[in-house]
Image (tube, rainbow, N blue to C red; front, top):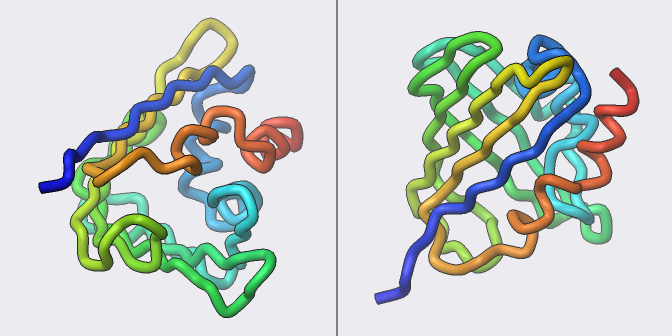
Length: 148
């Protein structure tokens, strides 16, 4: 049996919690930065219904091979504006993770002086993913932060 783990990442943004939260629930903003390095998210693929039972859906597309797409279809289990988003999904098209693997994602937003701390917990995964290791410093996310 493959050992499983959950990924944990924390990052502080120098922006109010409302602005950071919006980057995760506003389709146009989410499309600007989401995805591992080498991928982009077409805004037309993003659907967010930020309520319990709502959707958090998008498709990551490879910059080098547009035929390689990885959809994320999540159902939101818990939502409290500017505080927490919890969703569940099934892995599809993620290297190293068998299609059909159930995954959960928790995003916690906490005010921190004049900024916001975001804590991400996602998994379980069968092995360490390099894209998860780079989440806190991911250039598009940093570019989003510079644009707000």
